[in-house]
Length: 508
Image (tube, rainbow, N blue to C red):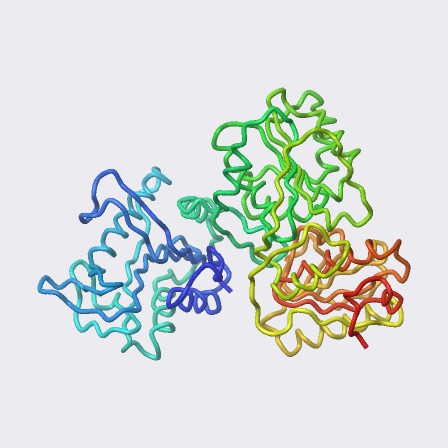
């Protein structure tokens, strides 16, 4: 499965369909980048700005520049392909030629030492008949509705046929990041537990409002519900700090997030686990930072936050990112003066789950979501005891993957217990822990605390203790688990929780 940047959910219509086909058919070492804007001070083919529909990068760094149109097309007197879009005539031939030349100039900026790189231009018009070659383009590089067996398969086969026969290359992450940066992309934090990390545009204007804030306070609290974009604000801040030369670091209680950031973006995001930060400042005790982002701060607690403050520069600021609803045991209790931002809109949690959570007494702040998914996003069951619940959930997730093998990479098991219990259970052979050094292909499994800040489409959860401190703890555990799911959560809770909150109402 090829890497598609940004996520398919950000695309629409024919471009989404083509990108989805590329993603399914092209091998994992291919990268498909959608919507790459460019601008030049001097016109290229009469244009100073443009947007490239797709740049497809092969393992050997062959570049395919693809112009896509779903509209009816005609040839004008000069032999250019003209389409009508929203009442405006567009010269697709000129646009494609300009885009190809723009890519050549961008590559000259990227790597001055490399003189030659194969670049192919394609026109993809699945709803048009283009009967002849256009200016500056061979007819073989035009894929229209007559293509066999269909335009989408023909497009994929054509670009794969351009790849050298014997290729033993790995994707050039620098080149991929170069084109991504033209979009001001950053890592999509919701994908950090996925097999393939996705990239999205920066949140605006909220991230700018927070990151550019001028204030005397050293501490900026960013309290946000699950999926509100807290981690993405931190990643945006790290990228901007690098560009301006400011010293910055992200500290997390989850080892998964720093590890995946290092894997997907090399040194672009300086991120460490809290224990790694302790070692770092122990080795260099005079180290100071202009910006410190504490991700999932509710897991670290007040004492560790106080320790981190010791390494702030005189002009520095700490950005505290947390979700009070996930502060299960009340670790975070900061009373000092601070600027506070509250983010209540979730871009991750399905609307129906948000509505269920908002009915719970101890869930504050409430969560707002307009995200719709197909079907019921919550399947709530009870089990006689935690061990029975675990086995029922393992069986259900295994059956789901057996029936839907193409969704295996989108599944995760969240254990509502501690890591010691995690290692006592015999998990299916191909399930990987979030902290595993092995490739993250297939399903993952880990504890509820390690999964904070992460998500997958389909969540199966069980193993919660029969004994909890009270209704508030039960509701926060429930909130933390169900907000890990982007599409659907299947959860087995102890029968003893029946009297601990109205989220159990109606369960037989």
